[in-house]
Image (cartoon, rainbow, N blue to C red; front, side, top):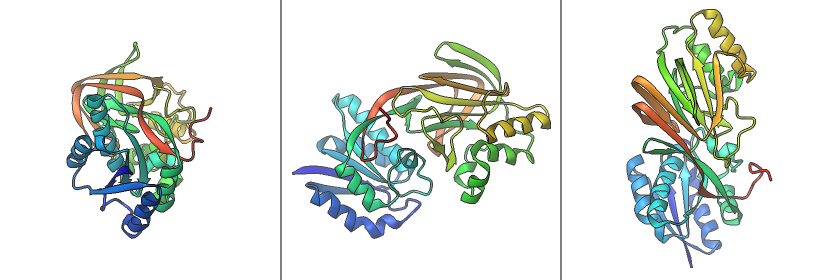
Length: 305
């Protein structure tokens, strides 16, 4: 009999997982799996448990929000480096935002998501690394990097991600500015920036992601957006107008696709990684690990061709 490790966050944003747990376990059992359930306790403990135990399972499934997915992937990535083979995984989204699941068109119905896992095929997706921390879809710094996770959905729908971030900044014009030297696969850019994000997703914090229209989950490239520090209200408004229509051609906005980004700052640059604190560094090295995770998906429309 095949064995499945089921990593469950009982405190995820939508507690519906508790009501559906027996039905989900029945789906796995009917598909021929013997299931071991691990309720998560903390981020660090989840990653460590997956690292220490996932090797003996045929499939690892996590149920929770983006943070739970991030911790599970972190454990798998470290394990794969040790055992030198792939560990297959599935994802049942039940957090409050579920950016990555929505981008990959994973069902928001937990029971259907479980059925899709056992009936799906393996797709290989990119994973990011910021220094020693793995991330699934976003590493960001600067102005209001946590605001998207506490914003009501109606505001998100009305304004869009960066547009809302900068709209809020109209009343807080004394934004923190960072003097950066940024290297993209050999190209160097210098300047003062109030915000930056390095992503591999169609949405971030529930908002449509900036510059994501040509993104791919498996091309080995990030989409990086850096917003320069506005010196006047006119410049700030210009930035907002561009972001509202996803126009990244303005000289106040830097947009690049690259496999590696290195940011050098005279002070420590604090990061938010997949919605959680990701550390602070004077030199931040971010790399794309192409097709690093084997994810079971039924709907493969996010992987054209």
